Length: 332
Ligand code: 13P
Ligand code: SF4
Image 1 (cartoon, rainbow, N blue to C red):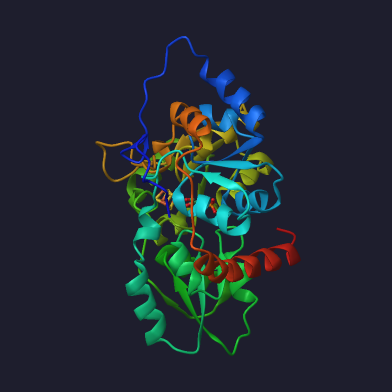
Image 2 (cartoon, helix red, strand yellow):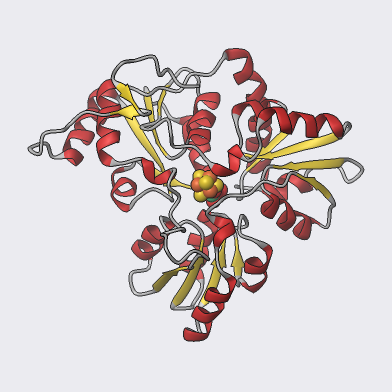
């Protein structure tokens, strides 16, 4: 998907020393203006990137924003499936991703060949895929969903139809639970969300008995069972703003805490701990590959750029458009 045949790209990004004299934030703002570019950032980006972005959102809102932008360049501060979705929806724009190695363990847990075999082995099923999937997987999907609209998407499918859901098994189980429908679920998962430690979350809850646990549906079932609220990153953010509690234990990637704290400075937000005590496991290392320096160089050189074969793009477009139509009907 990437045009990596350019000598200035090293290790998936432009590796050039930047003079300490440069005010990187001012330089990014200047380049954005000169080139009529916008920066779309996911909630899992670092705080400095969220603060310079033109729009910060969850996967659904970012896709909607990418579809309607009139900017000439979309710089995606997120991971590759998000930038590819932007290109699929708005192909005349130049879509840039500052690091080609910003991938997604969940999307990679469904390699195209294996997922296609799964689809072929289950004929006459409607295929619903999470947006965290490759463009090739999207191209053999009937309807895409995000964590914001997954339940509504599955509910939109006639009850007499059988449904395949992939690649996230935890989101799939959550949808099953919410819709009462039996789904054929691909057994993929996100390495960040599957690592939250139930025991340590409960220890925290005991320490802060008035707190609320909020979780993303990509978390494992035991974490979801003890949670007070389950939703997409945008829905979790809204919940922490409207709920009267003063303390929240947040089971998703830690980047979202920045927006939560910004919106509610007097409330306390605690990142849910992971099973591995030796790492900052609630940080997605793919999301965190994007830095201000890489954003600056990417805007300057307009590389790395997302390229998608047109026939593949058209196949992947249909299930995304269906998702956007259904979302609109539900006011999402
Ligand atoms: P949402 O943006 O839909 O909340 O999903 C989170 C995610 O996993 C992005 O990688
Ligand atoms: Fe993918 Fe998980 Fe990172 Fe989201 S947090 S981009 S699902 S690896």
